[in-house]
Amino acid sequence: MKNLLVALIIFLSSLSLVAEDNTKPATQGIDHLGLTVSDLSATTSFFIDVLGWRLAGRDKSYPANFVTDGQSFVTLWQVKDKSKLVTFNRKYNVGLHHLAIKVSSFETLDVLYNRMKNRSDVVIEFAPELFYGGPAKHMMIREPSGNRLEFIHRPPKAN
Image (cartoon, rainbow, N blue to C red; front, side):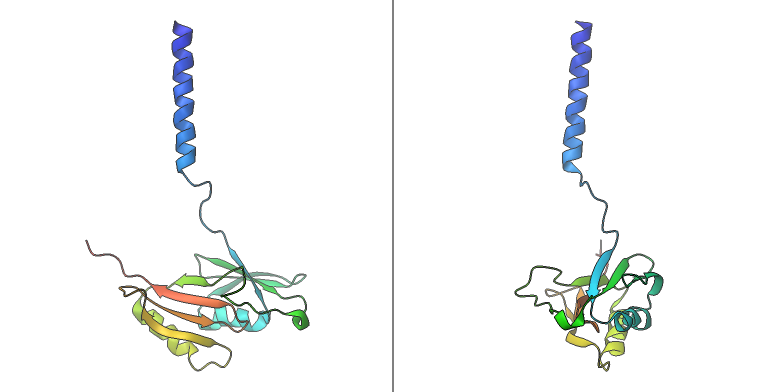
């Protein structure tokens, strides 16, 4: 009887472990995001000079640059052959639709918009506006290589 009880306890314990494993994600967030870019220098400069990110490393053999804001990492990979470049169409291509980057405030969103609106290498799809009626606000741009970037601020919820 004692052996049966021990076997039952072990069996029930294994069931709870399985249930726990099935209800928790196997992942822990995004480590980094890789973007293929048509102009490595211009896009790296955009992340550093406009967004205030820093260069965290590079791989000259690929070539690639690694940039970070201290929380997120983005790998910028130079397209191999610009003559064979195929631009992304968000309505027809499978792939990255856009990268959404959090900003700390509505004021920061406005500062970024003002930094970008007169740049010839940045296309602004829309200026800061309410996100689905608010209270969040966002804007969408295309950085110098054409990748779509969204900048968004979601104010903390009031209790």
